[in-house]
Image 1 (tube, rainbow, N blue to C red):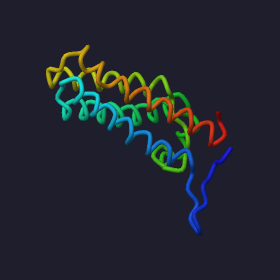
Image 2: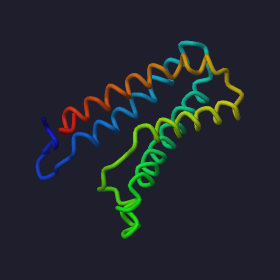
Image 3: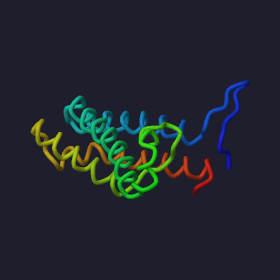
Length: 138
């Protein structure tokens, strides 16, 4: 278990670093898969980035709604970056909804886009599991 990485005087949380690296690699893999499958890589990257961002915000908001009594006294705690607390199912719901509506707006083929984003989704799940393992909760 390595919750932090010390580089000289700086201390970095391993989970946060792995989430950032995992998001970057996941988006890159989706873009590469789109190129390989003959899809529009910009549209697939836009769909993936939108779903990732909306999923993160949705996961946080659904967590806040589930545990509203803890946040009702201090509303700043909702957006405070040092708080941990995300709801996986809420994030997946909002990410899927955002991806669906983005794909409909861009008139993308659902099956072709799913073929392109699956490698990114799988690598993202690998990084989430690795971050949980190294930081301690997993």
